[in-house]
Length: 388
Image (cartoon, rainbow, N blue to C red):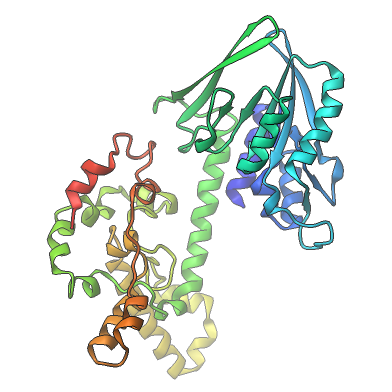
């Protein structure tokens, strides 16, 4: 929610001409959505198939703007499979069929005589997209899924604001042609003077939230789901040397102290951050006593907590760096299944079902090795460094 509020506030300050209602709004409870709307009171929301029950005037079904001597009409569409039904009191956003919503908005929009009609799209599905293309009243689609890209459908640029999308529009008589380019944003580019403080606030609030999480999770540390590298290497000896020689085994040390205390940076340099058995950066005993003063009244409880915190701290230290489970997923069930199978407690079929682990590919690697952090990432060459 912190990040979403910052995004909405940034949109407000950037004075964008149109912003589509999307999955972010669909996923929030009513009070959160209203908070977002208040944060971005000046954001020009547009959607042809989504509306707010508690604030129906928050967005328009279409918008018209002037640019480069053209009168441009804009509609917004969101995935109708994520919709809350009107009778669903838990949801604040009501979404109807994308094609029906677009058709109704286009009937009204085209009466205004726009030169160009643009649709802002958030995963409406191939079926709806095909119907709209066949309908023929939309000139340009922005934000469609990559696999649907063609001469008039363009995907959104990705990777943490390190790329911008630029569309060159050429008009010949009554016909338009489009050319799309992805532009790299140089690393030395300074943040916008009004947006930079928002990013700083989000980072500080996330770190404060992380501190609170660490204090609350000390008792959960005994619920182990990350088994740790040594549980893996006891069987997978051939994987130990490649890992030890790789940058994964030194990932934590590659961060400076400031980066280590930033939860966003740290998450890609540890295993299982804030998850049971993972990297917790656990509280010291003094922090536990500060939060639970009544523990001192019960020696048995104090001893139990002290032991659990000590174990959690030790485990947390062992989860620094990018271990096996950072890529292959939590291994506790896998380890326990193998041990029970070797003892004859479960049969081979059940063991095979329980021992499955993730086999990561390029998409998983790029959750951390993105353009912002690993601009030269190439799966084949990077995999060769850690092949096992």
